[in-house]
Length: 336
Image (cartoon, rainbow, N blue to C red; front, side, top):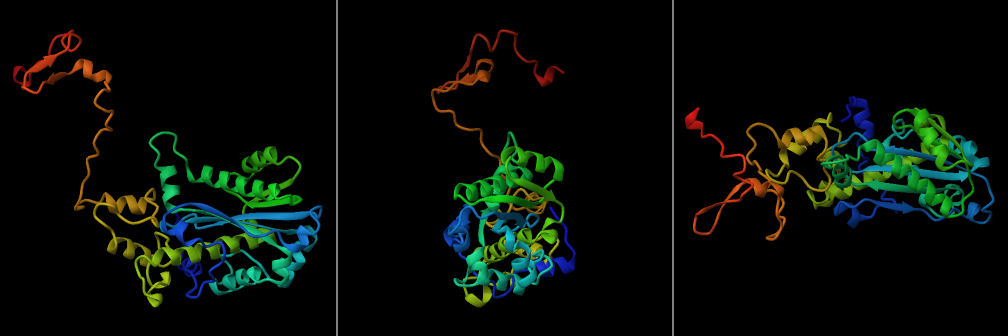
């Protein structure tokens, strides 16, 4: 769905030694389940729940055909917002930071007794490829990606409020129109100052930190997914397999073509709603074509159309209902 240039592909490709954060739940990822992970409330905040905090939200993996989309949330005392994140630890948009730097920052955040651990709380929502596609491919009332992302964002923020954290300011990287998105959030959180902006991950340190949490979690989730195809430790690195997961990454498309089951396609790591996947599955010359049967309504169920059709009994005799012949019989093609 999203094209990225070669430099961006390099930045989006996971580090070979990506940090496996506590937000990685192997079984959920392998079974294609979406899930939420929250860190403990940081000590500085837990000791004084009246302390005013700032919160940021950002995502990683919106465009790839492979792997989950991950939303990250990050909060800390308002007074330490710029000095701790931007001044001391140099958080920035995860796309600007190298994979190794992102992984290192996430590691520091998760190590007890560090200043980041004591002051900062974070959460992630891993939106599995399976669930994303299920929403987008619903036959009626499609649940598009923007709607899914907005619901996840709202739920993550609500979770933090439910923990008793005093959030005074919220900064979010936009999906769609910033003003429309902001107005909706202001109705839901009327006592909080909400700012929705384009490129918020490069403007507000808390959004930059949320971006890092989301990206490192996605990188590690890709590694978990890839283990099912390359069980050997050295072969498990996605950088040698499907690369960044973006359709414009040649490693990704090569992997998709080489690992496609003719009937089922791929596993829970693939977003079947993406054009790249659909095109490969529906390509001319595909080995397998499927005609899905009509749902079975049971022996006793009767369709409206049954009243207008001739039905043969077990002896082969044609039983025509009164309604079926009410308007006469169709003219045979031979007559025409």
